[in-house]
Image 1 (cartoon, one colour):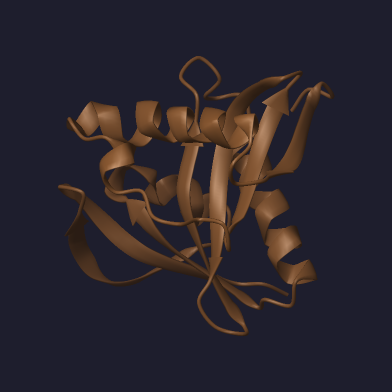
Image 2 (cartoon, helix red, strand yellow):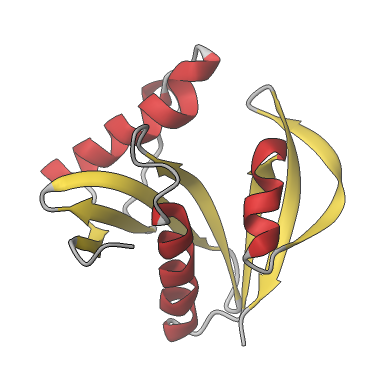
Length: 146
């Protein structure tokens, strides 16, 4: 990944958070005929990680604590035109190190069926059977942080 990228925490309520919501909506909801703004809840207690190229937000993910040792990764999105440049991989690896620094030992996620290979390459393994979420087939995946 080029040096000009930086991963930063995004604080809820800021302009960067508004950009995050727009990116998540464009990538994850609009293609399904949905709007993230119809399902939005208070996200202020979650960890929002954004990948920036200069001032432009090009990737995002959220970490949500679910126990003292486990965190859920969700809403992973990379802007169209920025995919295939290692941004998603960089974000996930950064999130793993960040989660570990907070004391978490395991990351859990719901992967769209089309993204299972991406996560598998990063060491995540499928657990359980296929299920439907937001109208799409998903698998639950997990990774132990060492």
